[in-house]
Length: 409
Image (tube, rainbow, N blue to C red):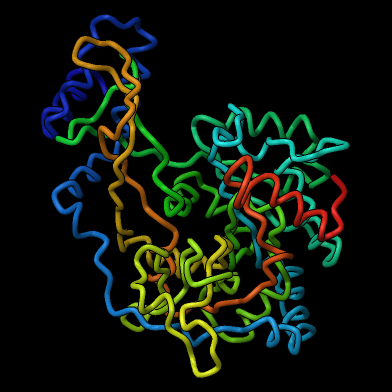
């Protein structure tokens, strides 16, 4: 779009402040700004009018569809053989959500580049590739791996993988794509400028992975390869298993349309989302959304009724995801501290929340599925998230679990 077209577009949405410094910019900066404005999804602004109602939940009840650790052991050979066959046929792919930075770990680089080694270099990305290589070695075929980055970390991530020779993974089976961005606004709905030539934006939440995957053209590429199921997982869990043949086989054997790896909650108070039912359909309820009665409710065998905590490792049928693409995911409006330019053009780094960001969440994708299998894994073997430098869910706790599983650091 040219300047006049952009100005008309902004007038329609009452966002003309985004061109406030246009006359001060050089030609290149002007082009970049106009292109960024053209790419903005202004439709998200409509959600500001009902920001207090989008999180309303239906009737929540415990989940019955689950395979416990004991169930899995009894059927491991059957599930694994079914999964291996699907992987050998090229039906399974893995997708890594890797758009985050290592800020909370004291790093200004992508989170996956963080070094957790003690006597040698061992990177988070490296551990994930090692885990996926176990599947390759077992099945004899490479699993297509799609890595979703963000605008801020894409170049560093791609360069890092190239420098490390993809940690031994066949690069012909690895593709990178950048997550879609959403604008950040003030409390009165005005989109911020981050700089005179740049709109303030942020990634559109972990639920935005599929629309970003589709727009990148990689969904069509995956389907052309014969991929039918895609296992998405987060960058921070260094013990997790993705494209796990037993996991894949359990879902296929049961005829499920989606599946989630879960762990039994360590306590009723554990701050983890819980897989359950909402109005009879699979749903994930955040820990703060459970009432006290629900948190402590037990079954006849004494186990917690809401016991299955999700670990952001999901298996989806691509066909279902495409069908649901027309049904908009819930847009969550989150209060955040947003750096921006003030009325005088000065850069402001706020100490308190000053605006809204717009996010979609993968947990809402689960609720759009007809069913979802809860697949219980052993916490000590598959759940070692790195969210903090020390303490709970930290570098230290993850290292301890890696060592427990025989990994040399």
